[in-house]
Length: 502
Image (cartoon, rainbow, N blue to C red; front, top):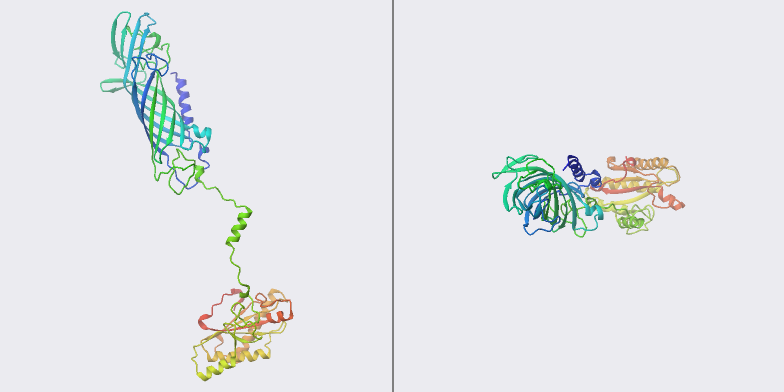
């Protein structure tokens, strides 16, 4: 084989085994994949050269069936391309009857035997089934083309008979007198010649399990010599052995041989799984890059339609809040949802359930029964104001005075004053007005004799918490108020914004 042809073959092999970044560019997810495997194979060999009765795969009468075996370590670089280091060993044999020497016109019968060749190559592989048909067809089948380069060591013995002269003889190549075209190797007392070899072939594999693949492979090996059978074509003369022991180039092509074998592949790696009907589940384990499409492991982004988005929004929408939680129809400080008497008169003092209470009777009972001072029950009431005023009305003064008397008797109670306005001014003005109303009520309580002013908590919200519509005279009046809440000390937990409290 000419050097330029060898260089071309090596260049093609490097292109074939190249791990192109485009093949992996689409896969950048967190899912790891297995990439290593080991293949063992064995089958029959067939020699092609001068000492072969037929040019094709048919064997002559004196040609025996020979075999070979091997092992390869495989690395899958991408879904399409990979490399493999292949070692093989086998036997070659060939025979030709009725060979006519071009020098003497004598008729020869010759048989050669290469009892044990050893070969080591580095091959690149291309998954042509994926290249041609994509990832959705031939899901469990894989067709690889492979091309490589390496070395072969061989030793040849020849038996020949000069039919014309009735002379028989035998000899071996790779002796000290023979031409070692690329080097030699001593093994079992024989000298082996080293030559370049170019393997090329096709393999078909079927994925049996997550660990094993079964396939058939044919590799045709082009050897860089025509002396594998110890002949040099038309220049050979088996009497003088002309051309065998020299570098003379004969009329025939370089020798080659084929290996047809069954192949069993074991896929290495952790947690091996295989796709089922083209479906992948990245959580089930690791797929092998030899078979899987990395893009299939990346979940398809979910782009909801308008109908989907509307359905999701409705499903996650909180249940509507009962509007009675925010309304207080009778203005007694208890929301309608909890108010057991929703129509108590304006200015009434009510319990936590909205039931009207007689504050005078509560005070009298406390005095009469000499109740403990640490007992306290929740009471609610409102006092109202005139438009844009923060002056306590006379009816409200009476209520506040009774509140003072009750608080002085019940030391475990606190009072919360919450100021409000109607909506007929700016927000800032209304907040300030609600604060002045709370301050007026607080001053009245202190001047009325409240023994512990620190028990007063003041809050103010302007127009932000109305209890009635601001469109009627009655509604406006109901919103101009200060809520009075008498509560036990351990129940005071304000949840209002800090900007509205003092």
